[in-house]
Amino acid sequence: MPLEKDEFQEIWKTLFNQTLDKKSLSDIQKILVDSLESEKKISDIISSDIEPMYKITPKNILGENNAKDN
Amino acid sequence: MQKITDYNAFEIVTSIKNREISALEVANAFLERCKSIGEKLNTWITLDEDKIIFRANEIDKLIKNGKNPGDLCGIPVGIKDLIDMENFPTTSGSLIEKDNIAKFDSTIVSKLKNAGANIFGKLNLHEFAFGPTGLNPHYGDQKNPWNPEHMTGGSSGGSGNSVVTSQVAISIGSDTGGSIRIPSSLCGSYGLKPTLGLVSKFRCMPLSWSLDTFGPLSMSIEDCALFMSVTAGFDQNDPYSIHSNHMNFISKLKKNELNKTKIGHARSFYEKNTDKQIVSRIDEIMQQISKLGIEIIEIELPDLNLAYDACTSIMVSEAASVHEKRMRYYADKYDPQVIERIKPGFFVPATTYIQSQRFRREWSQKVTDEIFTKVDAILAPTTPIASPLRNEHSVFLNGKERQTRGLLISLTRLWNFYGGPSVSMPIGKTKEGLPYGAQLMGPILGDDKLLGIAYSLQQEKICKAERISKLQ
Image (cartoon, rainbow over all chains, first blue to last red; front, side):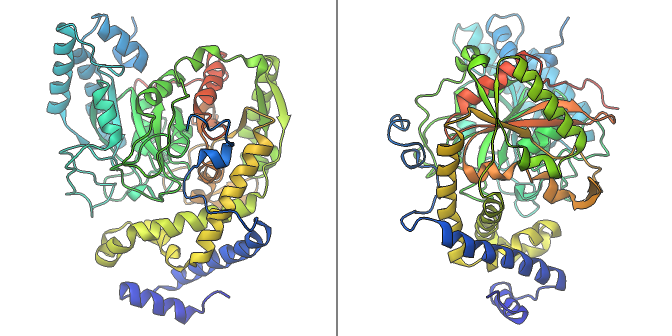
């Protein structure tokens, strides 16, 4: 579940010693709801053994033969 | 007679090496345009005339002594001001970094210098490269050379307006969600976002490590290939770096055979949210290239909405991590619109970020296996609109009001998520005379082949970059 607005404020105050204005709060909440909805769908469809892609790893993406120079 | 400033980079190198013109003549001709046009368009953050002349004399001396200064001999180059160059400030378009003098060259600059380039200075950009408009309250909005009331697009706005107005022959930009291709489209140049890791990012200011790429903007595909032939390659200092031993950027420009080429048309990817004039021009191009023997294959890109959301989670999380310390101490010095875009990154859960990167691997694999076994490249518009006015925060598109910023990156950021190359090519102008581009998107590590296809389209005049000699 997305955090409540006062929890956002507490996090922001701890990190930056400031409060968030109304617009920032609603923007953050929207992005967070979207990303959590997607996370739900993603975790349902990805293979259990797949590792994160932080960088291109040609052997994994292109296969042994095409990646032999890499 | 052709003016020196109308030469492309290849022609400059050949003319200097054949002693038809000197590097000093080249430097002076381009420098004159930097001084007369650059200020009006807010192109530069740092331009050092003395160093430019010194470098030109250095190159001429090498030529005189029978030495080869390199493949980029005397070419005027501009670099986006988030790439380190020794003894120059790297401002990243921010006041916070205005006194950040680089102690060393980045790998890109070092490779350019070793190849004989004359690096003119540091180009203006959207603050910290975090925005697609080129608007910058600190160093001035980068202005569109076709109409200065309009945006260049960004974040590499100075890189875009500098090449179209012949202030430099090649400019270097960075691309995290479209920052090379968007200004290419809106200013009317070519621009290549290479495969992630192909060009080193060492000593370049990051926006989002796993999405950032660096590449060229220029007035011909040959010049993009020339840049890649010098800068692509493994760099042990860059953890994202990959090898490119099998690529040959220059020879692929001649060997491409269009009648064996297959282009994917992902209509559903762009049609609904793109200006009708641009959609019609893409349809026209599909017909034109079909007559040249290219096979057009209709395709669907998988799970688009999930890919977009995962891309956003990755970008804002990594950007928040990059900026956390600066935001704690210098929040008041940021462009407020940039800081608003960074804020959500502090609230994305770690699991969302990691699941997004896991999904990214599976998605990239799927696109490579399912799409690029059927086609060589995908063609789509680069931007769904031509350049908006600089104060136009929203635009009406197909009867619906849309936020300008979101619209501008809507067709480019997917390829940063995928990781493969994408080249933007100028394909037309609106009735107001503002250019727009199409992008060819290729498979991971297919950069040289992609440039080969783009070169053939350029030779067939499907796309054409037009220089501006005088501002309106």
